[in-house]
Image (cartoon, rainbow over all chains, first blue to last red; front, side, top):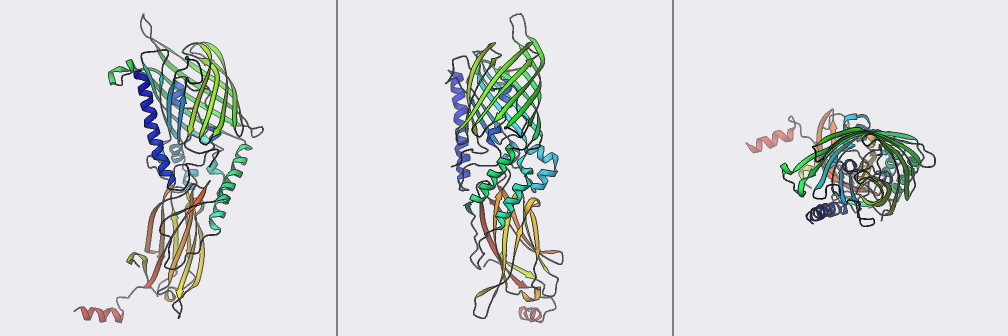
Length: 344
Length: 148
C-alpha cells in the first residue's frame, strides 16, 4: 500500500511538471513538437537495470529530451511489476547554450553534452515484495550519423522559407511583441526530411551506466537503501535504409548482489544481444536474441510498439522476466515530450 | 522614440555595417529597410536588404547609403525565426551597427521562438540615424558658451 502511494505520488509530480511544460509551450502557440523522430525513442537506462524495459537490446540513437515510461500490470497478469521511469536530457533543460548549428556540428564536446540523457526509475518489485526498487542511469550518444541537425537540405529549406515573405517593417510601427505563426511550408520541409531519414543508411553508438538499489521496506532513509546491481553497456544501431529495417547490438557488463540466507554473494557477467527492428510509420516491431552470461542462458524476445495518439506510444513485449524466470507478456506506455507524431 | 533607438554616426566616417546575430542554433531571416522622410513628411524607401543567419547564426550587410546622407533616416526590420534544436527555443537576438570597426549601437533581446517543424516567430524594431556632433563643431562651441 505504501509502495503504491509512493508510485502515485511520483506520477502526480510528473503530471504537475508536464502541465507546467504544456503551459510554457502554449505560449508559442504550439504543442511541444520538436525535431526528433518519435518512432525511434531509445529505451530507458534506469528501467533497463531493473529489467523493466520491454526489450533487452537497447537502441544506440540520440536521446529524446523528456520521456516518461510507465510499466503497467493493468493489461497483464499480476506477475509484472508496475513502475515509472523518467528520462531527461539535461543540457538545454539546465540552461546549456549553443552559439550556432555549426557549433553543434563541429564541437564534439557540446554535441556529447546535448546528447546525454539522465534516467531515473522505480518499480514495485515482486522479487523483493517488501521493498521498492530504485535506479538511475546515464546514457551518452557518441555519434549518430542520421542526426537530423546534420541534414543540410533541411537547413537550406528552412532558410529559404525564413527569407521569403517577410512582412515589410513599416516606420514607427515595429512588431515589438513576438508573434507566433504556423507555417505549412516548414512543416512540409520536415515531412520531406523524415522521408529522407527513413531511406537513409547510417549508424549510431551509445554507452551507458546504471545503478540500482533497494529501498528497504519502501523507506528512502539513507541507511535503508542498499545497492544491489551495476551495469555498463555499449549499444549500436545500423539502419539499412531499405524496408525500414535496422539491426541493433548491445554488449553489457552486469554486477549484481544475491541476497541469500547463508550470506550475500555477487554474480557478474556479460549480457549481449542482437535485435532486428522494422520501423513503420505507425508500428515498430522487432525480435531479439540475448546471451546472458550472468544466468548462463540464451533468451528470446518479441516487441511491438504502436503510435496511436499524439506523443504517446503503447508497447508490448513477450520476453523472459529474469526475476521470475518465466516468459511473460509485458505491456507499457511511453509519453514522449520531444515530439508528437500525430500533431494537432 | 526612446533614446535607445537612436544611433549616432560620424558623417565623415566609413561605411555603416549592420550585423544580425542569433545564438542557440536558432535560424532566422530578416528584412531591413532604410527609410527617409520626403518633403511631404512621408516615409519613402531608400534601401532594403535581407540577412539570413544560417548555420553560423550571424550575417552582416554594409549600407550602400553614405553616412553623410542618412541623417534622420530610419532603419526598420522584421525578423522571422525558428528553433531547429530540441529544447533550444530561447535565444538572444542582436542587431549591431558598426562604423570603421567600432560598435556604434546595439540592441539585444531574448526571445522564445517556434520550433521550425511547426512554424516561425516574427518580431522587429527600428533605429534612427543621427549625425554625431564633432567636438570641433561650431554648434557644440555655441552650446558650451551658453552653458557657461
